[in-house]
Length: 275
Image 1 (cartoon, rainbow, N blue to C red):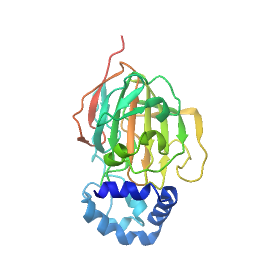
Image 2: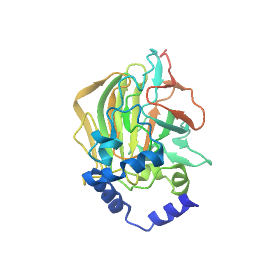
Image 3: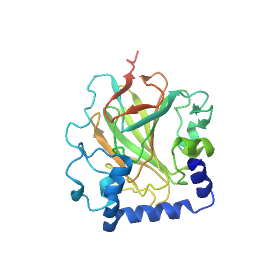
């Protein structure tokens, strides 16, 4: 009932404006007054983060808090594919006839979600939902490099499962950043950071682009590829959202359970040996 009410309200309210205001508030120093409530309400694990609450000048800074070294061991198996973030594997499997199936037989056109990027209509996908208490930095699931990105402005619907059920093609309507990863083992990978209501910003380590900051859509090939080790940081959410991975046909074998809770760096499958 609560989720349905939220969706009903946001269907008539100016989501972009409210989301921008929420993000602006979180960046102000007086948002620190909410830190203790936030930690208690969402049961945030403070033992794994760097520093103490006093070290974070705002709610936004706390949200993208770094973790202590070793808090997220990265599986170093040569052919392992790792989770790019903390979260829950809410959907995964093969893309069939250009559609990825979520839950309740709901499907999303992959090409629409990727802004027309082709080559993933018969591959595999993973959808990872990040909840408020999760670590919100996003890392590379493979060893390789970032060669470019597509920034696709859009709506800012919430992305929790009830919202995705209620709003048709929500992932391809919301603001999102599709990151182009190239890996010797896994081939061309697309990692999509999906914006959501309350996500004040999405930022990356390889570009100055900030989402939800009035910029127009962009498709950009980097002049020099940004080299990544498996588990290196790629970007971060300044509030919770979703990461979707896309792989081309036959490049990976996923090993996940429905709604499996993930931690960044854990194995989610393996890279198939190319013939």
